[in-house]
Structure formats: structure tokens, C-alpha cells
Length: 364
Image 1 (cartoon, helix red, strand yellow):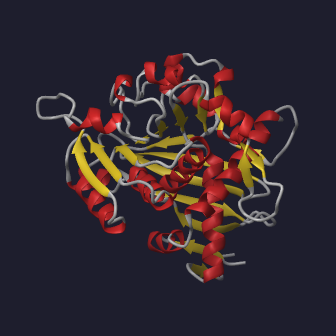
Image 2: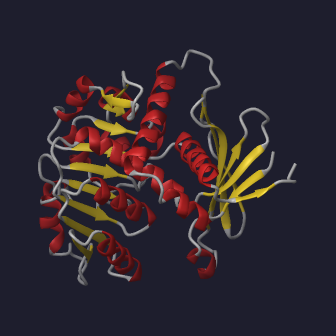
């Protein structure tokens, strides 16, 4: 067996072949399997394994090693991400977060593929958020507000604007109006000419909220945040009843993209993975949410009775319980390794079907 190598430009080609529905269907299967394993913790199984990540630090980087297993859907893989240290050079930091996923052959244990994963983490997160919105948003959204201008927001808006042609307004807020924000807004305008898309700074030169922020947040049907902020990006009072929020950025107890008042307005919060959210989601930790008020995304899903796509349907009883718990709905994601296994395996399989990538035949 040869080794398949998928560099970044090939991954981009493969990813462009996925529809939003395909990606949501993939993540639905991931979260149904994940929740089933969470409920059956007492049952010994090798189907879902999520070890703690390991970190190896050097002068320039913290190298993160994140192995996971999700069988039979995707098998076993490990994602490796290098995070620049504060003392790293500007050149190193400008390179972003290099990431690769190593996918194993389920039968032989050999490395079957090496995949450039730089854009796959934002993609799997965006697919999960879109899945949550498709279940929790009761009516077709007209407006979306995003905070951040990095890869996470780019992936989210690309999927949301494609899936919801009802969206006519998209406002993107960033710490400042810079080249990255301008580039993102320009790319979105090119792809979605029928949508009013604009970029804004979060605060003005005096440090006060940008004048556009309160009205934009108040008028948003969907709000997506993907920052590393340690303080709320906007107060709860800006957010209108009925709003759906995707909180993607925080991943430590010290990080908070929204305030405790807004979290408590939801009554119940949907998360990707309870065990991860309990120790990493700063907003939930500070709000002191009871375990019963934290609902896994997989709990909102039920396997479809038909074999035709999609493979899932909404668990309406749980969905209505979440919707009726408060006047906003919130999906908080901290990310979970089995998503990486699933998206990498899906990319490998599609690349093989359409004949993309380089195969090193004599690797073994």
C-alpha cells in the first residue's frame, strides 16, 4: 500500500467538492456516535477514544499532538498543530498555525495518508455550527453578525451564506479594520453579490464600542464569534430575544467572548462535547451551569429511519426543551478530536475517488 499525501492546494480542491449538506451530515454522524459513547461510559469500547493532547515545546513553537479514534466511521488519526510562542519571530508568527493530520489504515495500522489540515479545523467547526443552527434556528435567518476575521470566521460565513440564501445582511467586526478584514469582506462580496456585506472595527479610536455594533448585534438573527478575547465582546443587553449564537473562540477558563448574563439567558446551552466544555469553556464555567443544563449536540440528533441522506433527524423533544429554556439559543464549541478524524478521512476518501493527491508507492 502506498502513502497518500494531500498538500494544501489539493485539500482546497477537494474541500470545494463538498456541499454544506454533506459536511453537516458528516458532523451529525460524528456527534451521534460521540454522544452514544458518552452515555455508555461504563461499556468498554475501542470505538471512540479521545486521549488528552500532548504538548512538546521548543523556542519557537508549542507542538500539539492530538490523537483520536472514531470507529467505524473514520478510524484512527492524529492531528499535529504548531502554535508559535510569544518569543517567535514575526516571520514565524505570520505563517499562522501549520497543521497536519496523519490517517492510519484501519486494517494494517500503517499510515495511509498525510493531510494538510490547516483549513480543516475551521471547516469542521463551521460544519458543526451550521448543523446546530439548522436544528435550533426556528425561522429562516435574514442577518448574520460575525466577530473575528480569521480562518474560523471565513469558513463559517462561507458555509452559512451558501446554506441560507435568505441572509441579506452580513456584518463582520474585527479588533481593527485591517488587511485581513478587508480581504475577507472582499472575498465574501465576490462570492455572495446579493448580500450586503460590510466590515467594521469593534471599537472606535477612543476605545468605545463602534457606533454600528449595538444596532448590528440587536438586528442579528445569527451571531458568530471566533476570537481569543478574555472579556465580553458586547453586553447581553445588545442581543435581541430569539437570536442564535455560535461561540467558537474561547478554549480556556480565562477566555470569555460573551458575558455571564447572556449565557444565563439561554437557560440551556448546547455544546459539542460535555467533557471538554466543562474544563475549557470559560463562559460556561463562570456561569456555573449545572450539568443538566448543558446539552450535547448529539442529544439533539436521532438516526434517520430511512437510509437516504441525511442520516439524521432532529430529536424534537430535546430541541424544544432547549428552545424553551431561555430567550436566546447558544451553541458553544471547544472542538473535539473525533471531528478531525472524520473530516480528514472524508477528504482522503473524496481525493481518492476523484484522483487527487500524490501517492508514494514505495513508502513501505
